[in-house]
Image (cartoon, rainbow, N blue to C red; front, side):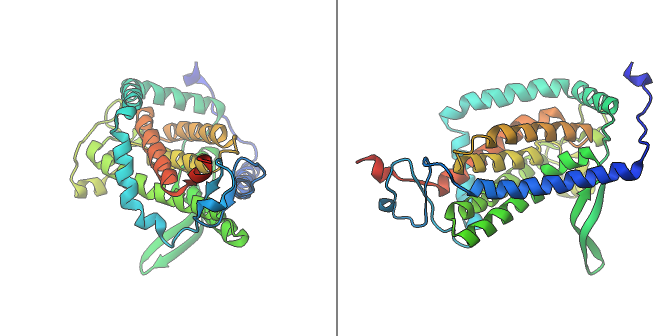
Length: 325
């Protein structure tokens, strides 16, 4: 029986912490290497052109990228939201809504059992379910302290941190710097698109969180969590974890980032399987630490996907003129 199982004791706590520090260092190196890998094109299927004039692209399967305008990810935000809404409620999206709705209802009905099962399994393998971080970079503004970057101190926190906005921002910064240094407009445009999608999904998720008002597992007062729709802003801010579970902003963020990367680098076929695998692991980690229910995920994935798709569609120009020749 799992309930009678003895807890796993670590013999050397300092070595254990060092292992997680190494994990974080490796993840950072891998992320930065992936940034360079995204930007280096070795395939003839895609060609980056620095100007908008499609006549300078010689093949119909070439993409034309322009230099992103400063703060384009902000100025294009209203259009991103409008296009995302139009696409979401079009006839061709009906099958997707059927999948999202049915899977959400099924998962909500099983949420408490799923959460209990994930936590039991995590205890069995010795995976700590607490969020543990160490502030590496912080600063004070008056009497208020801000943590600019916190280093995860256990494996579950490492997985959880992958879904935070800071990971996507780090990727954006790397791609932008690479694009500037190498005059690669595709890298710079992709960086801008990721930010564009993040802003759109962030607004969407925050509105829906306040509409749904679902308790997170850690703050739940009933099996599956209580729903408090249309909570007053003041009450929401006093007890955020009692209202912000549905939908998951973390998974929406990750899905949007993977969608934008895959849309701009189709020759990198490993992006989707690797990205979706990381999303899955992060989803389990958030159930384990009591931040989300499984039922919070289907809609979040849909939001991230559509915002990412619209950001790509808005910025990637296909050489249609060559196709007509």
